[in-house]
Image (tube, rainbow, N blue to C red):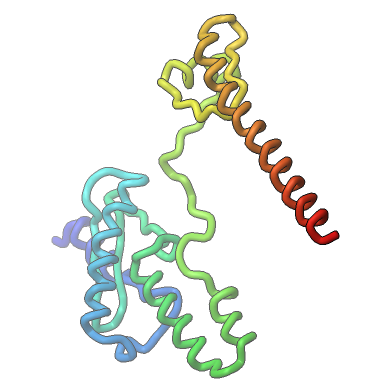
Length: 200
């Protein structure tokens, strides 16, 4: 009797898909196709880790036919065209190169090849991103406690009367920039005036 897992693996392997854009595999050197497949097999487990744990059920890539399979341990197949350094990405980039070559000297055609057919992530989904809602005072407290690095451009006042030395130091940085701006304007004005007087 054939087990469910064996059947599933066979179906997963049969579901190996070609890249979204088609190119003749023979138009790319075998060494380059092998490098593309290496990238595909390297990135499949990393992409799967965004939604699940464990090794992928299928992580295959055939450099002869430029087909691949990536089935995560939860049975889902990520859309590999949404990522860079995957087989669909490499094929899409090469498709764009070939499209530009076919356009010859037609610049509008060549621009369309790239602009209307972007490769890789355009607006990637943030699967592992967490969102929290906190009050402004709690956020200010947590960032101050986290050892925030100050750049000296804010006013730096905490509003509680503490850390006056730190606030003064931060204000000093902004003050120096304002002084530099004024001094620079005065120098330019003096130079223009001296040039005008010398011209007369």
